[in-house]
Amino acid sequence: MISLESAKDILFDEIERLGLCLKEVETVPLWEVGGRVLAENIVAGENVPAFDRSPIDGYALRASDTLNATADSPVSFEIIDTVAAGSSSTKKLSPKTAVKIFTGAPMPKGADSLIRLEEAVESDSELLVKRTVEMGENVALKGEDITAGEFLLSEGTILRVVHMAILATLGFEFVPVYRKPEVGVFSTGNELVEIHSKLQHGQLRVSNIYTLAEIVRQAGGIPVNLGVVKDRVEDVVKVYEKAHELKLPVVISTGGTASGDYDIIKDAMDVASTTRLFNKVAVRPGAPVVASVKPGQLLIGLSGNPAGAAVTMLVIIFPVISKLVGIDRELERSQGKLLKPIFHKGGLRKFLWADFYEENGCLYVTPYENQFCGAIKTQARSNCLIETPGGEIKIEAGRLVDILKLP
Image 1 (cartoon, rainbow, N blue to C red):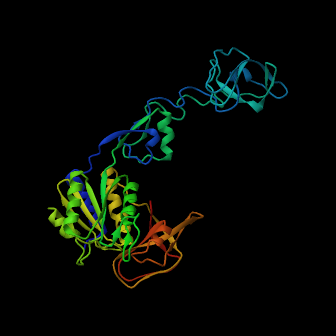
Image 2: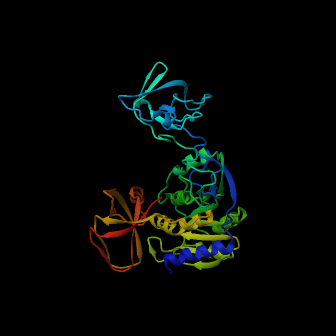
Image 3: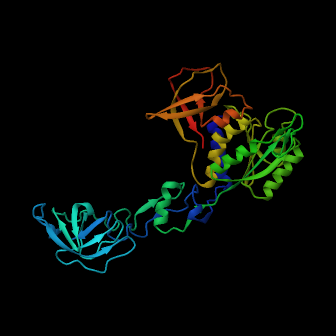
């Protein structure tokens, strides 16, 4: 039995040794790029805005013409044009002339300042300005937001909502990203049937592969459904052979990793000519994690119980798949104030299904009562895992505990 950290380090090392993290680049339409990993640095090729413009509705004029203007002694201007966003004025300002301008429109030639619409008085084609306007007042300058040549996004960035406007504004119709790795997923169990099946006595619909598949997606991979396999070594070996033909870098199974008569994953891995990396990880739930390696491929077997499969997939395999994508990423860690006490008489390091909420800048977290390995309703209600150390544990309500936020 090895530690969680050792298990991840071993798998990371094998990814590097086997060259599984190829970082192959593809271009994806900006419309579809959310959640992908940027494959190169983004440097601005132009200024934003590309011209001096008005951020307000008002009047463009020369500041020097407003010198000494007051409410009692306003300065009069001739309005020689009107310009809105998307158009521009062909007129050039001369002394005591102004252009009526709307938000987003380019500054007319000769103008160096703006006064707000509500601060001046317009009558026919005449404008009265009742105060001195400062040079450059209210003008959004060329390159004020983004300057040509400015470094904006780094390679390895996970593209999210906040990045879309920059990419669109700079004209990135297609974005270079790392190709998503395909990851094989299958379940073993004589009792398992497909989800569309009508259940016979003693049967269960397969569910773990759908949980695992979505975690693969959240980590940036593409899950490949290798199906439901009976508890026979030869059947599992056939799946491994199919995965090898498909050139899947990682194959993840759920079920058959313990030590019972029908736990056949280890035997199947041996027949498939693999080298064992480890047989068990010191966590609950999900300790019987088995990993083996063969040229070009990692084979990983997880517990067949829903909680064990999900927890080890989240805390071990999620970062492994992220590494294949080309980034270092784990579940987001934080601390929350415990609202119910936690007691353990002993045992391994544990991960408990829980729910947290934030209030006044503080996180509050409640572990669920039912932590049974087969419980799936508990998972559905959770938005985090509480991590507790091994051994005898007594954590009173009000104490801070480590939490891992679910993706």
